[in-house]
Image (cartoon, rainbow over all chains, first blue to last red; front, side, top):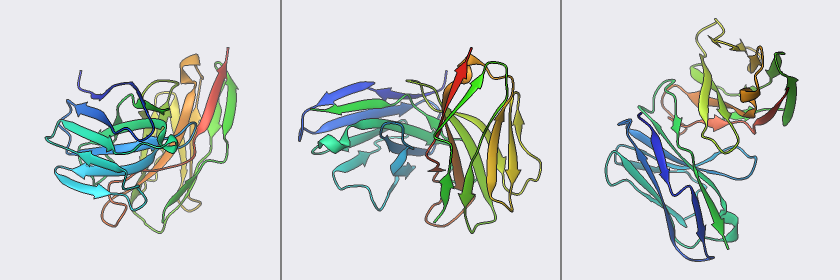
Length: 114
Length: 118
């Protein structure tokens, strides 16, 4: 089945130790999004790619970076995780930016910072 | 800037009964889409239903229907014949149709936790 896959599902990292979260998709969608979701809150968009074009949200900390080496894969890098970065990180894809296209979400990676 | 408000942090319903989740939004745009997403515990978020703002007819998907009041900027979700599997966090979301700094982005409400009692 076509889907959005996130690895790992659970990640524990130490304060200040760089960490990378992975997202892959078999949907061949042009757009890939990264969201941060803290407990019982709405997802907060960090950035998105339209093909290779990167779009950063104005309030996304510099600590968060992303790479999209090809259509299928997108990575979220947290350069120096702080305790406040502990959250669920959701990857989503969409065929296009325009219109009412659905966003397809992955299961998320729960990040714990110790 | 667009905002989406869900005023009910939690709702509960008896199995087989009907429940309505509320959502209001604020926008100056005339062309946009509205969505309800469901996020079950420890499972991925999935689309429940979507509404195009230019369509007056309310969207329906099996047991799920919406009451879209464009002038009032209201977009409620009705779940009929509730099932245990409907228990989840429900998010209302808004997306502009084209152009602007919010292009392609979903603006979510705060979410409503729905509990279904057997």
